[in-house]
Image 1 (cartoon, rainbow, N blue to C red):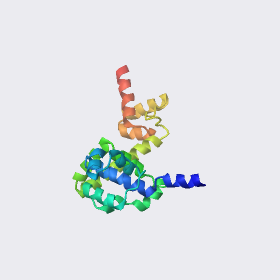
Image 2 (image 1 turned 60 degrees about the vertical axis):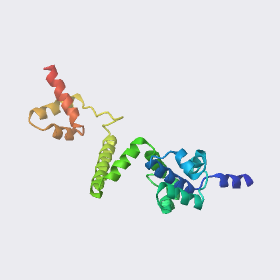
Image 3 (image 1 turned 45 degrees about the vertical axis):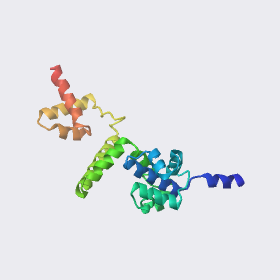
Image 4 (image 1 turned 90 degrees about the horizontal axis):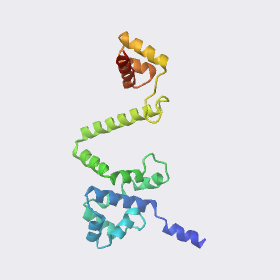
Length: 197
């Protein structure tokens, strides 16, 4: 039982992890190294790592100091902290770990910086566009004809019928819709026929 209590004390708290991930996110957005933050705090960079991982709890005074260095209010570190327990338990589609992993990549930081430069109307349009792209991609991979990212192939009979319909004047997109394939698939069949003639 004593071992269970000791293990429970050593396990990072979900809120501590959340606050640490917010410190890390803010530090990376400012392109500040752990070493630089550590020097400003008067601690080692390993201590900053422990804060960011949630291994060591950040005291109130230290959090105030970090907020001053990173130029954000203390409340920034607690944004959505009440949801941290739920996301850590896996009940959220997008966990803080995924967000943190994205923000720590160079692509993630570039996307965020560009997004922050855009006005609100443009941001809404960007989000709508990305949602549409992701939904379209998800629908393509759910199509039983699309396996492992490769377009579905038509049977020889379907190819002949598709080519007849194209010759009769139907558009490539309409024919592709009939067979639930990408229009470029129909275009490739059309090109092969032209080459063999």
